[in-house]
Amino acid sequence: MTTQRSIGSVDKAVLALQRLGEVGPDGRPLNRLAVDLGINKASLHYTLSILRQRGFVEQNHNGNYRLGHVALSLADT
Image 1 (cartoon, helix red, strand yellow):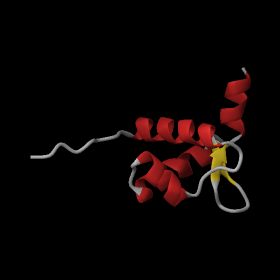
Image 2 (cartoon, one colour):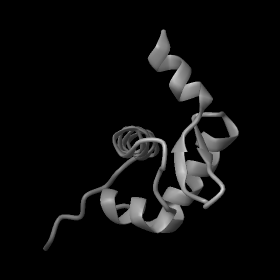
Image 3 (tube, one colour):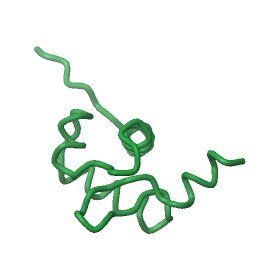
Image 4 (cartoon, helix red, strand yellow):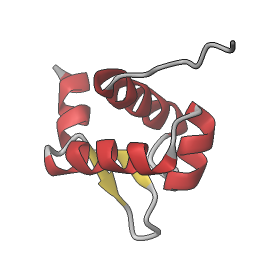
């Protein structure tokens, strides 16, 4: 029997925010971010949509996800 790594919602959100912080202002497209993190694309999309509603992430003109104003303001405090 193989053990499958289970990742919770908070873990997904934190991992996504960390990765977006690493890649900088150009951000990452959803599919590449999902591959980078080893997370199901649909599940990650849902997590990012909630983070986007709260201002933690945003999408640029190319559709790439990047850190939003709320995440950046936390870094400034």
